[in-house]
Image 1 (cartoon, helix red, strand yellow):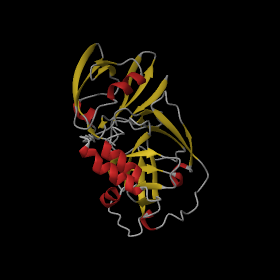
Image 2: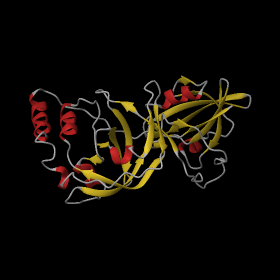
Image 3: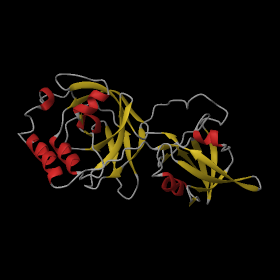
Image 4: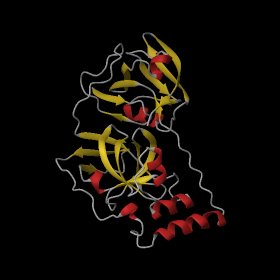
Length: 287
């Protein structure tokens, strides 16, 4: 029997540790030193690998993984939202990547990259891009890509990247004059009738842990005060369907909740004892 962790941010399921919360416990899950993280991702329309992050508790923001970038880089607007203002562009950020990976003090550069400026102006990626994760983040992990799966595997390495040097103040003029390209695309987009429409919605939080055996998916734990708890989901309930999709495996649940956002109302049908019950959950706000 495999144990799965349905976090509650829609579309996110991963292995859970032993000794997880019981339904009647109100304390948070015990924190342990983790070295392996399952990071949900999606491919943009331009086939960039996109993950969702929070910076200093703000977000979620859309960042692409860029092995050619030297550092964590975000737009100046996003930096301002985090409360970090630095004339030289650099600042310290608490970085949280969806999937449970947190770096409490990460150096980041606030500058408007011409590449992202142009892509956003034309709506090329299909979503608004807010920044990139570069070398000073990626070098700390071994990253496994499988484009047939919905998650990347980040494994922590015993390596600390050297201090960043050579990017200059806000990297102005450091893009070889190519920053003009971003401004040009921004001006051309409306002339070409292009108006990007980016919908930013937080993932829906449900608040259950599950375990599966064969074709049976059972609720292992319900987080106290979560949307599932408020809706009346109980430990031991067998999931029959979620949001209209029949549930017979953890993967079915992943697909059922993949596009559910915060504030959505979804129907969950469960088997309880000898009968079946239909419950309505209004999802909370995840990452």
